[in-house]
Image 1 (cartoon, one colour):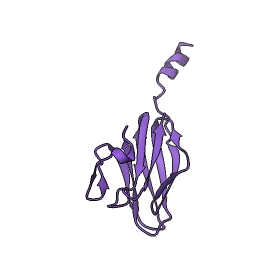
Image 2: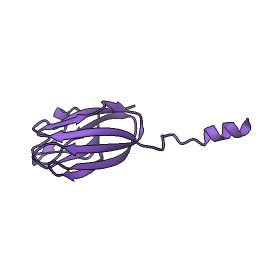
Image 3: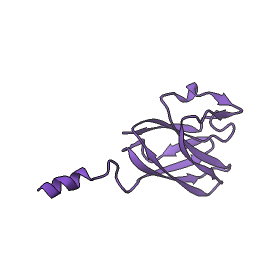
Image 4: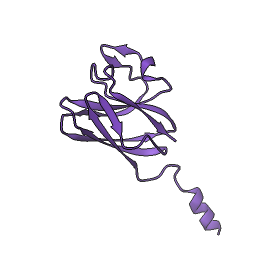
Length: 125
């Protein structure tokens, strides 16, 4: 019985396999398969169905999209926890991040895309 308790205590705080989140990027939308996930490793599987190159930037913030500062057509990335890099039209990409509980914005931050409305809210519980 003591060994069983020790085994439970040694269990990591986050699940070992990442939660899978499908993300579709297009002009000018970010659509997720789920609105929230549990804290821990999250693997974003990104599909660009648009005609332009897009990217996925994950911001942990309490701000609304309207409250983010813009500079040269891009949102402030000071609260970024990671990103996919560019995903060409018709291509796919991945980003695996460790996320803590809180409010996030998933955005495309290619100049002009965020300002055109390419973002969505996301929650980590």
